[in-house]
Image (tube, rainbow, N blue to C red; front, side, top):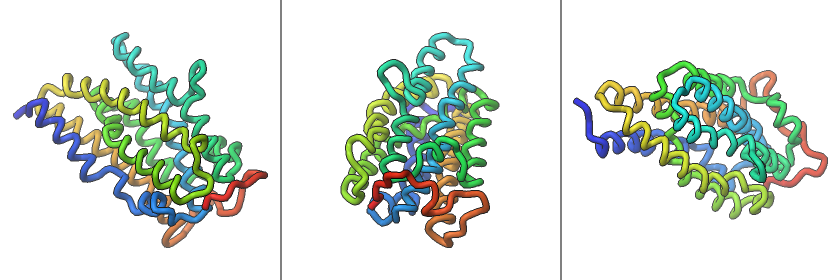
Length: 251
């Protein structure tokens, strides 16, 4: 039986309440100031792989979109990350965070040293958006429903506990507080309109669940490699390497 829009939206939000990665132990360590400088750097290095893949994912999605209205609405996501005009973009802001924590931005931008599981998870998300239905692709983006809360907590926690944190180094998160609500307002409206059968609603919920798994898997890999059991896979970044010449302390 097809749920009402109110009931369906509640199902989507429940996915975030149960499964969003703000509940992961690594984020608790990070936001509470309990990460070492190298653990912070490992997070910045690995998360960049995800950040840099977002516009690739969105370009793959847009290549399938025939509706000009949907393309116009969606293309701002690419510009938000790649930059456009006076907007330097989220990728550049993330590299500025790399500068602040003292890891070489060229190394970060090269994507070398990224954990294998990070690559597998992020690449799976790009393929999902490229190959699944339009509805599933848009629904997977709805983790943005839950992002403002984690960005606000991250800003507060990093400012309170780490010397590198200031308005400039945290500009990525500050900008996402403005960008994410715009993106999710359109995406949620689109999903609520187009998931007009019980089967489509189930598919949308499953897509959002998949995306939360993608985010969670990245943090599982990070925790296992750099926290406990601290088993770094071959080829992944080794602490105290590829540091910037002027290394800002991460704590």
